[in-house]
Image (tube, rainbow over all chains, first blue to last red; front, side):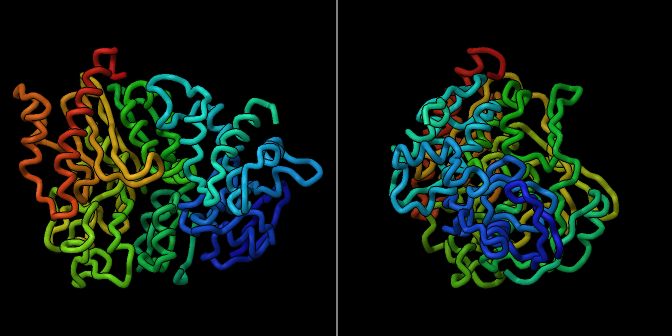
Amino acid sequence: MRITITVNGEARSLDLDPRTTLLDALREHLKLTGSKKGCDHGQCGACTVLADGVRINACLSLAVMHDGDAVTTIEGLGSPGKLHPMQQAFLTHDAFQCGYCTPGQICSAVAMLAEFEAGAPSPETPRGAAPAFSDAEIRERMSGNICRCSAYPQIVAAIRDAAEGRA
Amino acid sequence: MRPFTYERAASAEAAVKAAQAPGARFIAGGTNLLDLMKLDIEAPAHLIDVGRLPMAGIEATEDGGLRIGAMATNTAVASDPGVRARFPMLSEAIVAGGSPQLRNKARVGGNLLQRTRCAYFYDPTKPCNKRQPGSGCGALEGLNRNAAIFGASPSCVATHPSDMAVALAALDARVETLAASGAARSIPVADLHRPPGDTPHLETALDDGELITAVVVPPAPAGGQAYRKVRDRASYAGGLASVAVAGGRMALGMVALKPWRATAAEAALADGADPAEAIARELAGASPLGRNDFKVPLVARLAVATLAEARVAASVGGQG
């Protein structure tokens, strides 16, 4: 099937088997290998990308389901010479060890802050109240991104600093 | 994954017509269906993408209830100001399930139709009457720690994994559907899932190709609301048991192949029984299997705590 997805601001035309996941389209067809394949079942979050600004597991979506969408990957957030504040915060706080989960963590964290700003509740949000920024809220909202090196304390610190503009 | 063809439905009417093709399945968020397709547990020949149909609205109804389009994402429902104000327990149940990434994709209709997480269903090397009718039930005498304690049969002891469905059952919600004939009908959420009986592969009251178009929630009952879930991890884990309370109504999650309305407990509460006595009345009908015996005292304590939380919420004011 022929589809067009705007990836990191550039319209990309692809001719794909319908079985191709969004993750495989990005990695294998567009050679954007920043998004990682961890579990391939939506459990680890390493494949997290933004589809029309919303974070999703790229492994649990077919590329054909995104015909016409705008997708942002870690490559689209920033570049080595011009890092996104969240990327810089992860560097500053040494918020990774092996780095495999990091692109997903960063994409997830960027979208998480947007969800927070929009008032989306989490299990940490008191009933009837707007969410209040806290480490507990960050941890809960990042629970879909697993770090097997267990850099969680640094990840929370990096997200907090990026959110507060201190990165 | 097995090969399949794909189309994007132009309308609900076109979708249900297309669904008459052999092996056709609807897909919207796809978080459960694609997971199962990768494992060869689901192998549709044709996918009809209904995810872009204009059925994602969340509106107050004239009587003070709620009409939720079937394509609304879980995140949209949980975040909706009207839902949070009048049906806080529904919002809280939704955010108790999955991860934010999954809730951003998963839709209300698909959430209700998600399939069991029973380990034997997920393992093609093991018997499972739901996955392969006639092959037996591996969980009956196997690793059944998370199996049902209500409504199971010798053919199947699996549970339904949805948090949202438990809240909707306690809220007396109904699903609206569209059939290929063009006929629309309305089914109580509590009657949507079939008891397993001898045919656990037949899971719902829906006909082949029948599409859920909306969920309709009646006005919230008087009294408080609360949802509590117990699981092995602090977040992002399926539940061992959950309890939803809305006024005098109660539903139990992850203890049956459907959201389990605790009608015996409700009747006891209405007769003035205290919470512990009321849930004991319900649990008198439980049939644990060994490794899941713990669910009986767990649900007893969880129900008492959830009822207490709902009563506090009621005294604080409104449903909140």
